[in-house]
Length: 264
Ligand code: PEP
Ligand code: MN
Image 1 (cartoon, protein in one colour):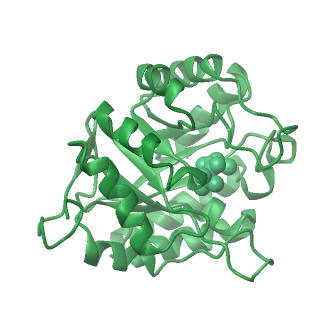
Image 2 (spheres, helix red, strand yellow; image 1 turned 180 degrees about the vertical axis):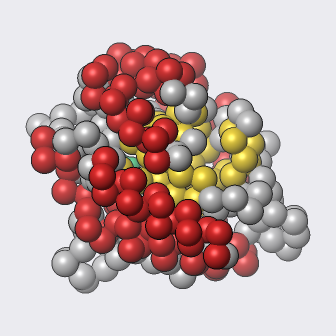
């Protein structure tokens, strides 16, 4: 298979317009769960940059559990996120949920995120594969490692070799955390595939004060980076405030992570 280590023994480095993922460095993507407005995304981009993140995350098309919850700002959200990222020298990762939005997302984003709920939306995987853009492929909510590798294969078979796996936790019987963060996926994916893998300790735990310890554990596991939710005012975030870090806690985490990276 195209994604397998057997087929391609060397590590694949994904070059996101100059930011390299999988080259032995540890790349941080940080930003709010949802883009909420220009002031919020501009301020969050400033925070992200101050901590050393290279890529700004933020959702403009949100896969919410309830149809009555905030669904995202759509193209307006993409536009202001791009502006905030450019103002701070950051790249952009954002989710696409629907084939119909691929063109507009490609216009503004550097990495297309496939959310956990769409890991097995095979037509969407083929369509994003065809764009040739770097793809951040989240693990499905109940996705096995083999299903996840097959999802990546759907992208790779379109001629796209810019895949970044994102471990974001899986559903188990445990309810004390939002998901069960499966860090064993990191060395396992690295053994089975040549593509880089990053961790998402925010969705992996769902609890803000568990994020930094699991980010440090992510470094120890050998991950190529992380994606983390931060917000200027987590208590008033429009989505995922419980798992978002404020500026002080984010900066502390980033200095701890830097120490871990140097020690590795
Ligand atoms: C997100 O990144 O905000 C998100 C919705 O993540 P996931 O698809 O992992 O639930
Ligand atoms: Mn979120």
